[in-house]
Image (tube, rainbow, N blue to C red; front, side, top):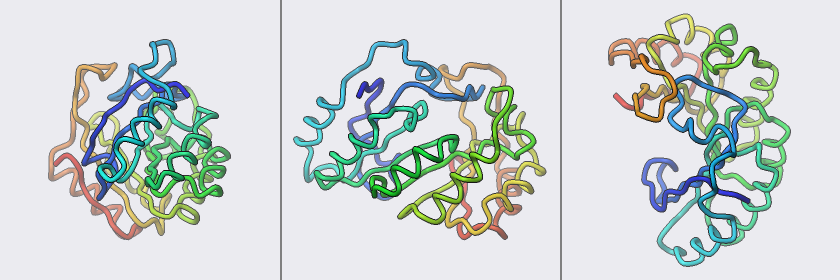
Length: 229
């Protein structure tokens, strides 16, 4: 499996654990505020392969607790479940980030007990989903199926939305709350501009607005918190 980015140590990407982060290239969305736009396709030269990753993890036993797979969209990589299985067999815990568009691949991972924690993006309301994702259309049924799989089968999980002033408003969160009704955990992440973001001009809502959005979702979700504020 080709790996296009690697962070040897993170205290943020896997909640509560010391982990490394593995970045896989390729994504079927083109979110205009994406922090990892360089991973949208697989044209760049890979940094390493799964054999090198396994060798690294062998040396870090007892020092790292987990491995976080992100992207891009990791579930586009058909080799991922096999690599996850190898890492789990070494005693590491595994986290998966996903955009929710691949429920069948997600089901394979969850049925195989290959992910201990799943983080799924909720880009916006159904009506604004495609616009927030930078594509012409998004099938909300795929999102529905992934939400259900995660809520019912993931050992631990979170849903999250990167909040952009120009793309989200109160109506966005009035729709998102019922969509993820009954979920354990939801984070609103304030957008942070970086040089890697493909489009300029996006900003984050202020703290007051972020808290207002969180209050709209709280009646529907067990835990709602803010990040980046």
